[in-house]
Image (cartoon, rainbow, N blue to C red; front, side, top):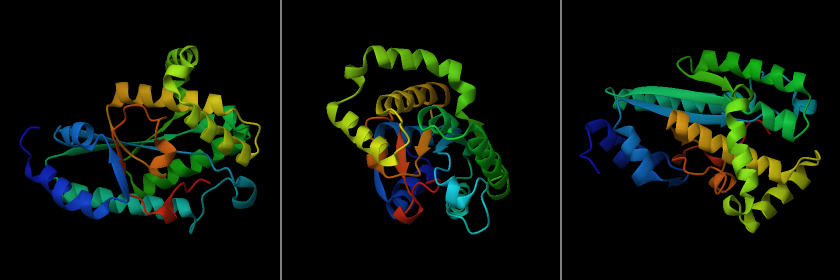
Length: 229
């Protein structure tokens, strides 16, 4: 590994040990090397609001989503202050197809939620970018087809069993296979196009085996996990 600059040394010896809430993935061969680049891309996927019937379609003051965004904004502020030579790019991905195509949520509900999220993101983390997963639908299809054709090579029996149990618990007639295919296709496409460091909003066990080769950090406390649920 190349010699660390002051900012990366701070991240490795101070920030990460103090902030980590779960073990990182590809820390030595993914996270740290990418932190040495002049531009560091952070990546955070964001799910649709599944409890919209109770919580509504629009994010309101006091909602958990805002607690998470303010928490992430504090992390960004601290990193920028201590890594002044690094240009950070932070891409948030609205996972709309997971709601509409896989879990049968109303298209209008999902669209309204992500419109609201984008507005709040612009207020709390104005330097961040917001993208919608459906805009990458055509690009992702080639990877979906490859994963489907070699499903047993990509997916273990244990992973399929976990995903099936989750799908049944959600009760939305969703397909565990379709969810897994979508997650892996997303991870492959994001890794190849952005080469980011993923900063996840869920527990590591939710990402393992479906995030392919994405380097990942886990910095959110459990109380802030999956704010869209």
